[in-house]
Length: 256
Image 1 (cartoon, rainbow, N blue to C red):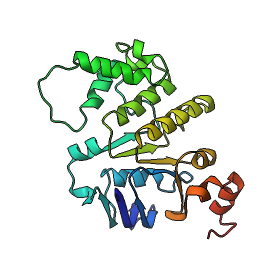
Image 2: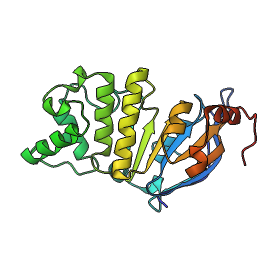
Image 3: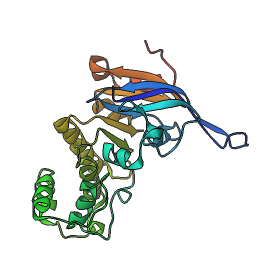
Image 4: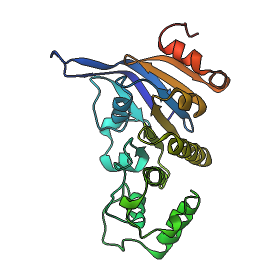
């Protein structure tokens, strides 16, 4: 078992008029190699859940174990090496004033100690070029270009590559296609699916897009009002239709 969440509770602004219970008694487990889509509308605690898993926020109650150890007891350096993350805003995961090559160099050393060794070696350039060529976007010929000149879709694909460059134990995708236009969103989604399957990458993808949640991943977890209302996988997930998921979300049918 790679990840275990046990009885997690999280409330913002407790004991005030703005008190909001975001997660209530949340429990689930993640096995190596699972690609889980986590579906929920805005405000259901999806991003908060990823922040808790990454050790950025603390739960009010409950415990999160990652690789057999409480996530809060692991060093930021170790978590940075073991957990890759892609955010909704394409600008969040890259340094726009640095080149593509320099961004990849930073990503390749995530979780390592800072040293005085050469910034980008000749072999590193070859590795970066090969990795970019696999994406099929022509970025392998633009290593020296500033990331700021890339389109939103190109930048998000680059961020995805950076997040998976060191083969993290866990990949967190936080609404990573929500800020893109529909056509670009589909391209990035297909690219994500290919990379995840190619590397057998354990992945949690949060989304409010029902179609994406059904299409991608080997397992679907649905959040509503801070709790899990459905957790399906395998053939059961493959047989889901959009109307069924929407009905479930609005509590119009029972889930057995």
